[in-house]
Amino acid sequence: MKANVYIGNDLIGTTNFQISDETMGAVIGDFFPNEHYKKYQTKIQSLTKDKGIANMSDFKFKLEIEEKHIVSPAGGIGIIDSKELDEIVIESAGNGKEIIERIKREIVS
Image: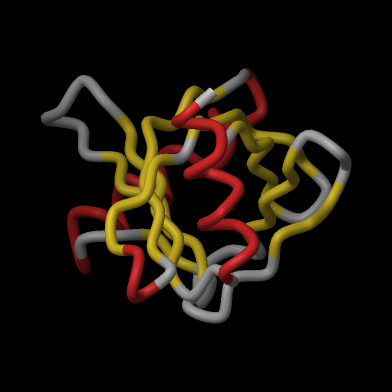
């Protein structure tokens, strides 16, 4: 499932989620940052180093799926961005059944 990723009103990048744990409503994907991400990157990398992830207690992350629908996962949203790795990962947990089913349909088609 493709999604736009925001911090507040700043669109910071995109992702294409896959299911990581269906029972927990958990999804994960590579994060593809845009130029707005740079103003948050140093803090996100510091949080990743200190506690393993930057999450919703640190930033007002929002996910917007293609139809301009804001997804509000019960377990939150987090970004893992380590200076030592070449990839940035975003994960979300506590997504509703409709989001998981949507991802399943996209995988099949």
